[in-house]
Length: 186
Image 1 (tube, rainbow, N blue to C red):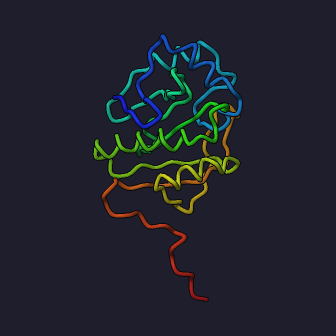
Image 2 (image 1 turned 90 degrees about the vertical axis):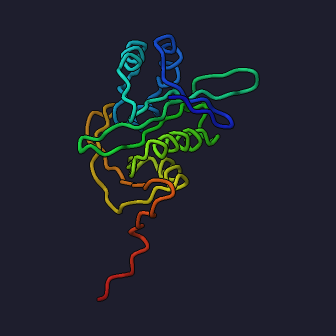
Image 3 (image 1 turned 135 degrees about the vertical axis):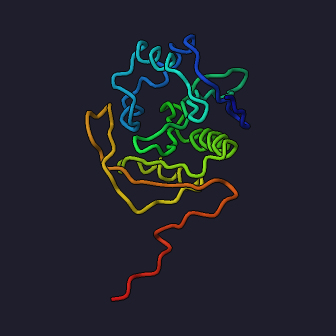
């Protein structure tokens, strides 16, 4: 699967992308905000990731930014299945590309793929100490579920508090936002 946005191309990774991937992902600030990425992240990790089989309903795409006359790998975005079988959105952007809206733009493209595949609900979470990711999720139409849970972070070596979000299929009924519930009577 491929996707093209105004400034980005999202595509499956190839083993030839491994050096660029290792450079883009090889930052502790990236790995500590993802659940599965190891730290330190080396060329062998990139090669192993790129050799993993892809499932049609869980695309894992590299994000390339069109900058000037060039194109460079700036991140990754995709869907994966949680242990409970739910579709979860994940994304990361290399630090020197933060603050440009690439995470939102790339995740929008992945969610458009999810909508095309008629995936009825996509969940996501962010570690409590990464509020920027929460802002991205809200821009994408995710609603906080009101739940906080421990999520595994391979780079941090354990469980980290994370806030949970959910988003329904575009064009479908909106998922309720627990913040909209009336206050409980005393």
